[in-house]
Length: 280
Image (spheres, helix red, strand yellow):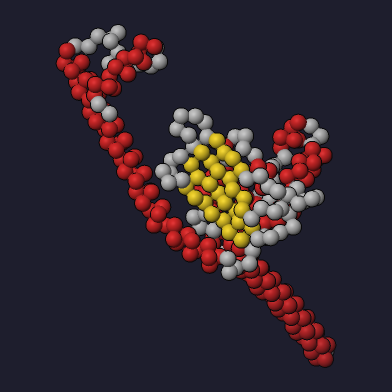
């Protein structure tokens, strides 16, 4: 960015009344201050140019490391395929994804064998999420893909694979009917959470697609942590229950000891009374 191109833009903003600036020509400065302000503006333009260059180099580095990471993701996916129900378990254990999964969808996702998240080559223009399935009773598709295009000039857009549902297995239609029947008012309807496949087929507002961002930035980088989450929770709960059982056993033992002590005291008092009577 050059110094010559930046100053006129600022003057134009001032003429349109969109903001204020130290270089506002309607304000009067002495010659020394005016010169200092122009020097500051020139420095700022140089900083902006470096920031722009840094962004370009960071983008190039991201592109480089995306290529380096790809074979590792491929290797990880191959290993994951050896573990039954890996992905559906990870999805169910993820707090945000599980919140939109209903029981039928959990059953359906048991047939999911692989997940891929691929950024477009230039990174900044978008990415796609691919869900791979083995033959299943719900739909005929082998791969379901949702793409996000992050245009630099317009609003983001997205598109999804059309799901070829088997007869009577359309989970989106089923969810729509269920929600319509459950909603007694517009407020209740608004409060009902969309389901996973409703999310997949919905492309009305890609700029606010939090589930896609969770899959891309949280689930995909490290799904293992969510696959193991239930085991970790069980271990923690197991430790807690063991502690509780230990405390209960100590309390019971303590109660028994107290009762034995009381019995001993009663026996001693009875013995003393008998000795006193015998002496008399």
